[in-house]
Amino acid sequence: MSSQTIVNVLSYEDIEVEASRSHQHRQDEGATEVTWNDSLDVGGGDRDDSMSNRGQPQRKYATYHIKVDPNQDDRAAEIKLCSFARPHMRAFHFAWWSYHVAFLMWFSISPLLSEVQKTLGISKQEIWTSSITAVAGTIVMRFVLGPFCDKYGPRIPMGIILLCSAIPTGLTGLVNSATGLAVLRFFIGIGGSTFVMAQYWASTMFTKEWVGTANATVGGWYVLPFAVCCSTRK
Image (cartoon, rainbow, N blue to C red; front, side, top):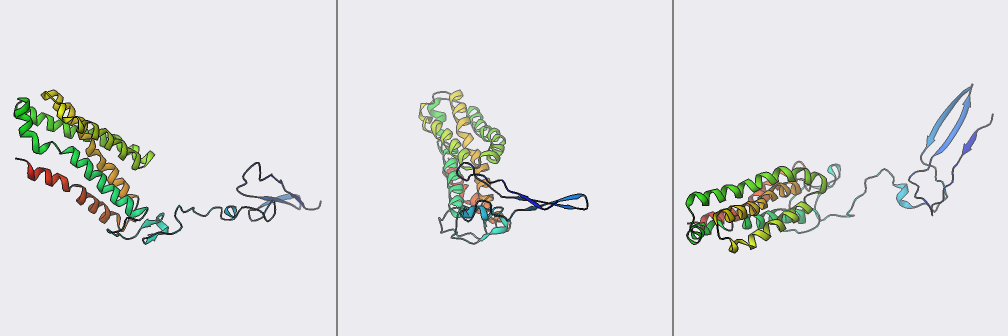
């Protein structure tokens, strides 16, 4: 029995062919050996160039403005603080700045608590209760946002949390009771959970040799408003 080559020719106008394989059947002393040839080009020389690179990792950016490690998914292998180039350093600066804004909202009322106490006529214990609820809000959301980052990445949760914190922050002046203050600070406090996204964001952008430095730098910069707010509190 002579050798047979079976080629299934598919129209490239109807379906995208990822790989072409030719079944080569050879009969040898009653046994059939099947070999696979992935290199054959079914359809001629008009085949798309992208198909010839099947199996090779696709890069979103052709070039980077920073040194990267291709063995670690093109993560940055250095930090250029004065650079805002995409994607590594832009993500770095967005990470710390986003948490910086969240911290400003989270502790914006702290320097005013003594005046709030006088205006609302509430006790110091009720002020402390509102401070506890402010921290409780971020604790709850940090447990929730970890899985969210794994599924959706850090950018979408970061934007949602900043928006959700900005609205109650803008309504601070409408508070007229101790209960209202506690509830308000609870929802403002969820802004503190942006810590999760900031660290996640920086971690995905830098190699294992630089991720610690990147996270420490992001953490040091976004905590700055906390020191400013506490230093102005009476």
